[in-house]
Amino acid sequence: MIQIQKTRRVEALTGNYAAAYAVKAADVDVIAVYPITPQTTIVEKLSEFVANGELNAELIHVESEHSALSAVVGASAAGARVFTATSSQGLELAHEILHIASAMRLPIVMAVPTRAISAPISIHNDYSDVMNARDTGWVIYIAASAQEVYDTIIQAYRVAETVNLPVMVAYDGFLISHTVEPVELNNEEEVRRFLPRSVRPYTLNPKRPVTMGPLASPDWYYEFKYQQVLAMKEAYKVVKDVDALYGEKFGRSYGVVETYKMEDAEYAIVTYGGAAFGNAKAAVDIARERGIAAGVVRVRLYRPFPTMDVLKVLEGVKALAVLDRAIMFGSPAEGPLYKDIATAMFMHGVDKPAVNVIHGIGQRTMYVEDMYKIYTMLRENPRKEVVFMGVRV
Amino acid sequence: MSLPKATELPIGAVIPEPGSTRRNLTAGWRTLRPVIHDDRCIRCQLCWLYCPEGTIVERKGVFQVGNRTYDVKYEIVYDYCKGCGICANECPTKAIEMVPETP
Image (cartoon, rainbow over all chains, first blue to last red; front, side, top):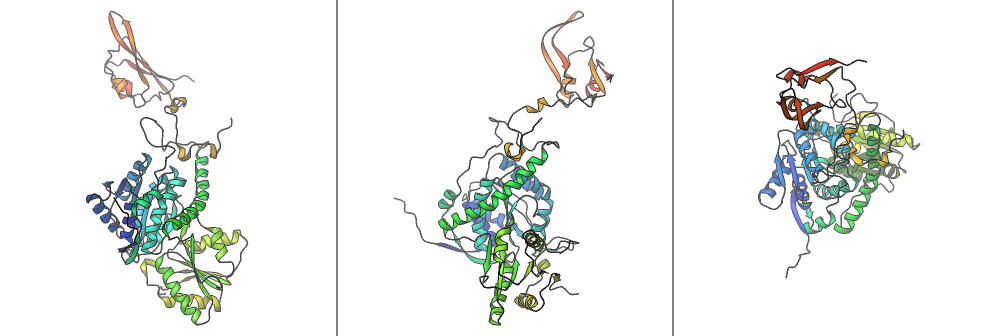
């Protein structure tokens, strides 16, 4: 008689290995990849799983990231559960296919350990790559720990296959992808029950021929783009439901925004990613010791943007700072998250001082002291402007 | 004409009906029309093979041409032929003539 052991299984894993373990638990069928730092070790681990017979999947080595995503588009169109991963220049090269994957409504899951973009060449971490892909119709999560990477990738498959949209799971390149944390792994049988094989409306099947990716004339094109708008609205609800369901089953859930000491906060930093959130939390503790009612908000779901949730947690604050780790050159404010929050506030009649802090570009060290300085700045001189922090000027 | 709404269309622009493109007549821009002179045609099948649009059909039957009898005959589907002239160029007996379309 077989007895299933119900004890917790905790392993010391890097963020990338956590991603690989999640993909194995999800029992994917096709993986297509091209190596790029800092993504490479995800697929190294996955090819180990495939070679060992632990994962029954087709692992395709392709000649570029454009091809990697194209290959999983094809496999997904044929009905397979697929995975790919890339970073930085790779995401840029695959950019054309990002739009195609989302518009063809294919439930692809892609991990993106984020990295700065050339030139000058940098292999280090910031969010320039993901921010360039933010409006391509993909659901985008930004995770803040190896554990969250693991949990989010499993959730991503459920979300993708429910709303028929591709999902990107981003996290700090190197700072999470290559650092080791204890990660609690789920029972794989239970994960597979959590991710039942859905019946897709259309797949490439010679017995039931369909045309995918046709030409749409001006009489037709707009309707399909509007379908994507509706799908994103649905995804906002589905992401929350899946997260709650995952919490019930596996005991860990995150919500679409994570907060730290926001209940009575007067000054808040809003940010994304592990390093920015972690250091801001440390700064909150210092600020609170020194009498500043500080708090942090981390946007976990970046697309669809959780407008109402973000506005709700910011209701009580006197002033806020949006900490961005990417630059939109020539924009009214250079931070992408700031633009989203400013738009959300403007549309809902909220007007309060909000400063845009750009930091951590090309993995420029963001000290806890810097974060603390943001809180004192908010208290002493609350205003609306863009501050480039940590740069020599 | 009222076309289907966004919510009524299959997602992802999938066309679930095979062969529906046939309803789109695509010959509108043709300026030169290929005409097959059947008496010069030796049934080599090259035009049928080379046509990039598959608009040349091979009809089966018994066809008496002069003192010869053939079991096939080639015809052009003018609903889809765009008049590119590849068939006329490839024909070894110059049996296909490109004739200007009259407005």
